[in-house]
Image (cartoon, rainbow, N blue to C red; front, side, top):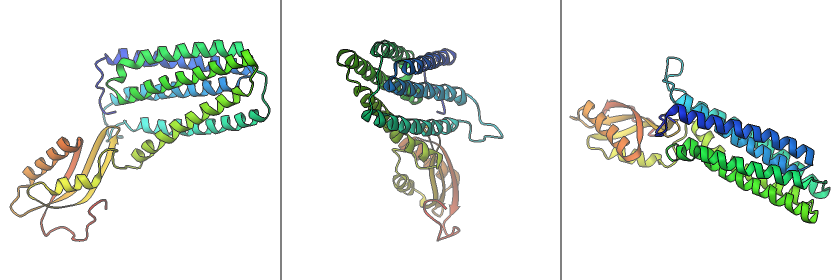
Length: 299
């Protein structure tokens, strides 16, 4: 995130996110203890999901701090990609934990264990309240920050997991349906894996310098070639410097008699107005002086 567009004071926003992190970490510890004491694997699964919320908020908190650090001689592109590196670590950890929960859940389907339903219901009820409080802390900021919005939506989704655990504990109390616990566990683990499946490609694509989602490279190429005075374009690169900051690097062959400075300005304006490109490095070449076999896209 290159800039913080939130209308909330940055320090006040940081305190909100930090408070949400502390609350979620405390809840995670309580759920793990309660799950171990009660024998509920579903409670432990929900605790791991809640830990993912805390990690998501921690990444968001770090991103807010990092976004305010200027580029320097060591990191000339800035520090915005630290968020993506941390997100990839987060997703990988969540995938491993979810697969472990699925293994344990399948094993319990064939050998249901006794579960202390009251502990499960009470702690899950507290978890639901914490999820709603966390969502309230981040709701205002989520309107102006994609980073915080993701954390906000993650917390709302986690509230559904807490509802599932409450239902499981209630059914165990009323009917001694022990098999509900591993079924809910598998559901929560599957839901976490779905989030990993949806989020990982976006992270990997950015780290691999892929074109930003929503911007089609050939559309950019055609638009640039349509600018008056452009004979051709080659060595076109399109990627994200950091989340939400599209970058173009290209060589532009100018028609004879076209001014380089004016042409560069018109192409840069087109990229900004039509595609939201915030940074463009454009090298102007004269017609007939470039390599005729140069790659149009990439090198």
